[in-house]
Length: 323
Length: 122
Image: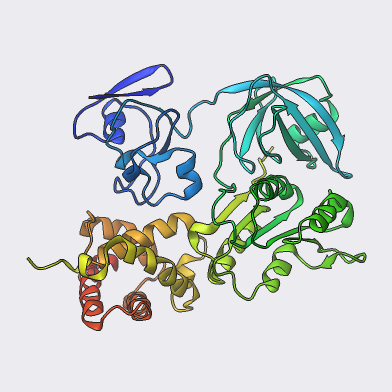
């Protein structure tokens, strides 16, 4: 009989019981539906041991790496400590070390932590204001010796949280940051595979992290980054990315503008349409889409129809919280 | 001892090889792709895999009742025999493309047919 620990509670998993059976018997509130490993409703995460392989069958590689598993398919093989999807998160306080503007409406925020952080570039965390207001932001850097996390914060009209970060937070202030979540990130394998990165606005944040990660792992296949907005003033890091493309012959940067004014060196059009038009076929490519939900959903479908395997499609749709 | 259809067709690797090809055909088929307009692609891929596993005679525990409940909202949207036929046709052509012998495809079609009334809520 193995023990399942959730926060400070311990449940005994009876022989022949799955983790889901145990939790339901103990009246723990956990979402579930099919109990057959199909609907993925009961996906939870182990925070200590690697879950049994059979409980991870059919999950995306990046979810497996983060030790997610299906509670309905998991017959424990040892004691486990797990986290439920809606469980209250563990927050750590960090200190703001950089806050400067990347363009007219996007703030670069770098937060430093006392201890090392375990995350993958491209994941997101929740930032929390002292009054409890919470928003998700993507991590834009790879793990670093300085124990810092980098974020790109776009100021939204009437955005309570983004306006607070833009107007009130200064270097030296403390901010509560959750553990990393999400499964849109780079795995260092198949180095010769083509990578297509498409993002709008601060969709560049996770993509910049993924790009840095891939290059630092010596990814040798072609890497295309399409980053777009309406006006050139809403893009950022343009020169840095052009410089990076000069240094890495396999990296190609295509800044896109959907507005009417398109200076030399920029491509006119909506980002995802420009990206799709550039590829007749995405068979064998690994693709990452971040930003506006409509763009992300369209790209997922179109990339799949153009031949990308479903296991190679990673996406992070930025859903804006209603005020 | 005779091998099961699932073993003869190639088991889980065969499901994995077929699922993307099959789902791509379904999404491109104007007769049926409107049923998939707003579904989450990732969740749908897992469901397609479960469906193929069942159609290949593999391990599954779907009851007729599950089939009815799972498709009831689509029946309300007008799901009928012609749509069911289109799905079976896409599955058949997927398997032909993967060089699965015709007699095995016929067995897969028979399994699909056994679910027709439940899927269509008849």
